[in-house]
Image (cartoon, rainbow, N blue to C red; front, side, top):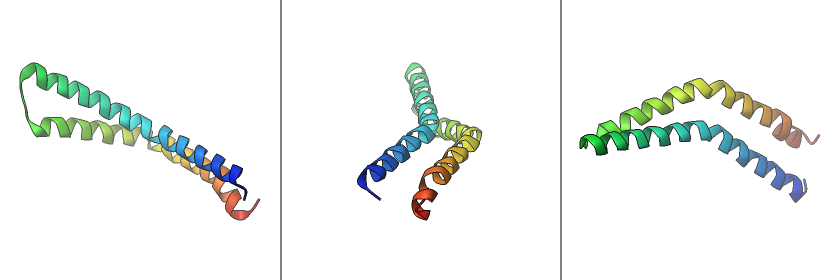
Length: 88
């Protein structure tokens, strides 16, 4: 395997990692900003108030997007990694 194939596979793998993580990170960011704004407006400084809504939002988004994540990873492995391993 030459280095062009290696770096192209690495680039594609990193891009897939970004695509898989983006929905959860976006929801965590939105939930964090919303909870922070709520805390600033009401002066409620409860630590569980920042943790629990973000955790619930991330778990819900993970559950909803699990099929997309699995399909993306399986397509990457069957289309890119397995042929490299098999030497095709």
